[in-house]
Length: 327
Length: 295
Image 1 (cartoon, each protein chain N blue to C red):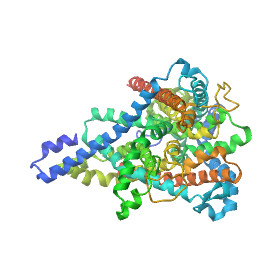
Image 2 (image 1 turned 60 degrees about the horizontal axis):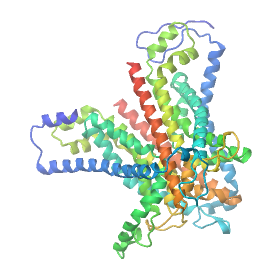
Image 3 (image 1 turned 135 degrees about the vertical axis):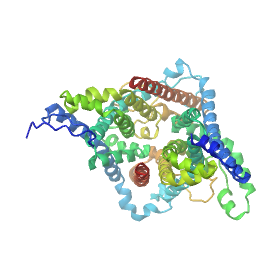
Image 4 (image 1 turned 90 degrees about the horizontal axis):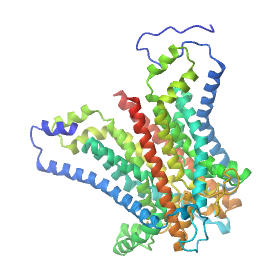
């Protein structure tokens, strides 16, 4: 059995090419094991992240119990409730998505359905440039240039909506340049490239024949997009948005500089706030004991949230991709 | 393509309200692109305008002075050295492992469940927040061995690994199967075919993917906060002792009230962006060269 040579299969046989000889030298087997080990490293690291950080955070989980979700954050009093930060993470991510998703989908449609191919390429370069600007540079610009500039607009909007029911509770009250809203805007800039490029990939897989069919029925471009492109790419775009959400939740440094660093739960979007990654970044240096455990624990929660969102997002993207290839 | 067919095949002009709705949609798409250009242009303009005046040889090499001192004194030397050391070490750690991981996925894994799981989780790993990588290395490394450039490189390496795996995997998939078959027909083993035929064929794409991962890692701050700390003098030993980097220094200076420190922050930002741009341009050149070689 050891040196049976493989029969050459008939042309068109599925499956990758295989070596003719089944006898495998030691080096060959070693190489395979090394490659397998490198692949397994991904799983090992993910498990190690979960285990090692949970271990460091265990004192927070065990002493506080369910109080880790309380809304009181007062390190000097040994009260470490994570709710203000979970709230801030959700609010900033929602603001970012509300702004970034329509813009990203718009650019993706512009690239795939409107402009000729030779224009599409430079536009893609420009969007990629957004992704090249490091997080900390967005933060530097955000806190020294953008926040002081937009502050005045916050103030006038805030006084403008004074007394109007819903708007007052969202945009009224005290305003600050460094706030939930500023953090949301900066996050929107930062997640636009990834949402755009993923949506574009999904939209590009819509079969030309569907689009031509819609045009042949006399549809305008908008009607063609609604009737032929959207039904095909809906699921994939949802996946892209979820991946953007994951990014927005985990983005640290830019937010840490512009969010205002105040652990409060308020509906006023122009007020300073805090979120999970930025409190870890800003407070870790001075923290020890239970305080440090709480911050690492916040990292564990963040890890869990982003893993769940990313698993769902990747599954959605993969499924929609498979369905389209099958169709 | 489709658009031109649409225009020529139209037997009847759509009524005007349908046309205007269509036009409004197109205008909105263009506006969304403009909305992205404005902040990008604004950021790049500010960084260049504020950074260019301070950048000099002295700025790139001198030690970091106390924040209160004016911009004319000192520079960012330790941060430049730290960024280069730490990013280089992270590259050395992550790129070979990432390439090997991708080799497993494409050359050995096939349709095996394990390969699918690894591929999927590797994509998921790209979504792990960078600050979590910092906490991870803090927990398993820094608590036992202390702060060092190596700890920072480990954190950046964890960040780069899944990116390298994904980009390399995409490149390996493009290598035509007949190349492998021809080599097997000559009696070569699978390892030999992979190392001498498959990897060299995909080399250009692998290199450009790795460079983009390096560019991404070089700009990261969060994984370095709890792994290297910051120092004000050059630490040439990447394996021991606290270190610093351009992003860490920008983060520290951005929250400083002193004008001199802020100016040095802008200079460091320009240096960092220039570094990322150079890496991106080299990656594009490699890709272009690679595309020509394949034809």
